[in-house]
Amino acid sequence: MAEVFISYSRGQRERVKVINEKLSALKLQVWFDAALVAGETFGDEIEREIKAARCVLVCWTQAGIDSKWVRGEASLADAGKKLVTCMLEPTELQPPFNEIHTEDLTHWEGEDAYAAWLKLLDRIGHFTERPGLAEYARIMGEGGSAKALREWANQFGADPLAADAWARIGLLEGESSAARIKREQREARVRDERRRLVRRMSQRARAGHNARPGVLGTFSAIALVALLAAAGYGGYRKVEADRHSAAAAAALPQAQDPGALRAFIHSYGDLPLAAQARERLAALDQAAWRTADEAHTREAFQAYLDAFPSNAIPPPDYAPDARRLLERALVVERVQDLLTGLGYFAEAVDGRMSRATTAAVRAFQTEASRRNPQIIVNGLIDDDGLLIEDLTLAAAERARPVVPDQTTVAAPAPAPSQDFLATLVAQSRAPLTRADFESFAAPLNMEWEALAAAVEAESGSLGSFDASGRPIILFERHLFSRRTGGRFDASHPNVSNSTPGGYPRTQDARWEQLREAFALDGAAALSATSFGRFQMLGQNYSSAGQASVFPYVAEIAHSERGQLAAFVAFVRANGLDDELRRRDWAGFARVYNGPGYGANRYDQKMADAYARLKANPMQ
View 1 (tube, rainbow, N blue to C red):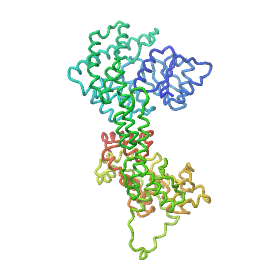
View 2 (view 1 turned 135 degrees about the vertical axis):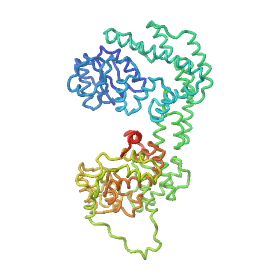
View 3 (view 1 turned 90 degrees about the vertical axis):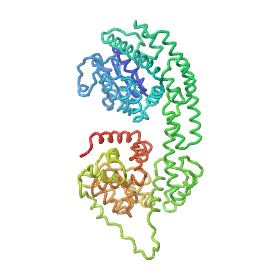
View 4 (view 1 turned 90 degrees about the horizontal axis):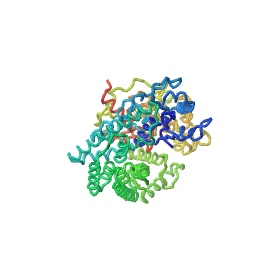
């Protein structure tokens, strides 16, 4: 299924074809089927493609306004909250489309750095989770310097265009002065000829003439020669083409590593020699993947992705598998680290699910199941993080100081009564200030902006407190069931259940749920509840140095500063302060939010917040 569905009036096919090809060149999957003929109602294919697309780009013209098919496609996209619009000619839009911001491309003639085009790409990038799309187009439209591309690639390393950016960087930084001058002359000429050609075709399309089919191609060097000759502009002279081929023949033997081969393909992809480079790159790719897969460690998968971040050659493409297995290896590595601390594992912490790792997991599960019968002994690492949760709790329990003579210790104080819940009301609802962030960041030797950026990205959408001043909560019935050994599952399924879920919609209903569980086991109920702005689970109390869950929750309920203290304690206990010091947003999000952090762009949100705070600090 396509990422971008383009809707347009058939009379503007040649102008829209420019848009299609530019989006495709940016490695977006585009649905652009000018051969499909609409019937009396929407065809199944159109409806399916619109619903599956990340966004729908409607190219408005007067004919489009008059077309019930274009209006219908726009309405369907608007209902799905995925509508993006541009205007190809002066057009008076009709409600409700006149209330939607529309980029004006009436004078656009294919320029990559045209302001309205970049704004359109920014909108498409938002829907397709490609936030660097417009910036890449701007950089390339302005000549694609190595410095600008390096900054872009370091910020958007997971973008499908990152491999192309690094390949061009390798090309630019490996050039001699003479080669650079020749390349810049060639690229300047190509850009100017292409710009003039696109301008002419746009003018012809606006004038109502039928443009020659297939005129706007990918503009590779050889295709552009024939294209420009047919258009009457001349083209490269034969001697220059010969030099181009000779330079390729000299460069290919030197291209042995992935970066050099990608740079060669980027520079000479129009020549037959590029096929040899692609075959060589594919062979290196397969060999590197076999090595990584056989090792099956975090380091091996990361090394593969560093060399082959995305595949610019024909399938097979191993990068998606490498990313998936890397995420899994990080989980295994976390488990190995916890098992090592508990004394179950003595091998290398490498993220490989070895026999020793399986045996250690099974040994831990066997011992833990004696205290909690719900723990299954299978030697496996589950996908929902319950094993890591059990290991973390066990590590916290073991970290508590041991009293040498239990016979001389007084009985533990009784747990607070039901009235304890009534005390969980904010004593101060003042928002966090720069001084708050500085006071917590300074002992960790990190920038306060880095801490504030993480706080902004990880804050819950509901805020810190409800209208009554109680901290925002979410009760987890499956955690309560686990902590109480399932003994309340039959009698109180609303609050004790081995299956996650059963979340009431309102805060009042959630607090009633907590009260019911609290009456059964107060400590377990609070431990199974997440509180406040950061939705910190009560069971994390040991990470904050608290002896029990009750003072921990009381501090969270006291103020936003108390909630920040709980968040920082969790960050330190999980070794995430290093990531914030290095501003390794992806590393932080991978642990804090889990392997799926990329889907919600937590790392990018932190990067954006940090940049904004640096530019405009809090007072």
